[in-house]
Length: 116
Image 1: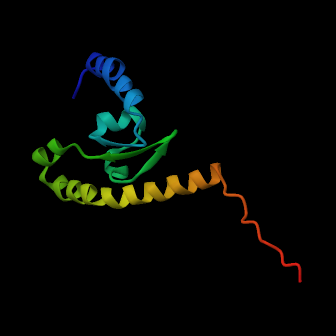
Image 2 (image 1 turned 90 degrees about the vertical axis):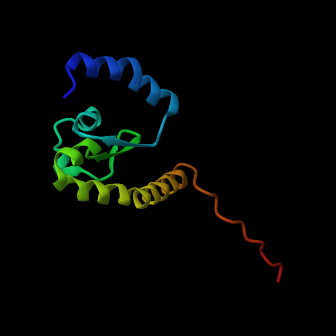
Image 3 (image 1 turned 180 degrees about the vertical axis):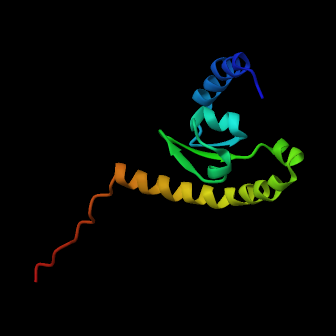
């Protein structure tokens, strides 16, 4: 496990700045430590592979690939979670489209009236 000073250094000096620059709408976290950055006090065994909206971003917590090396029982779950990502991205596109429509509704189409 990383030490607290390692987490603080990587988060403050690197990760936060990178997120600010890239401004991703979705972040896939690998492992419980990176998950806890966005979803504190959660258990990765309970929420892995489930997209969560945190602020304006979507977070998908996943097992760290090293977990599958150390605990072979996690490999099938890790594979399933990775296989689920394309579908979650499709859901994200639908959600963003709905939010865009709500933010900028289209005016109703004008109808030409007939004189007769």
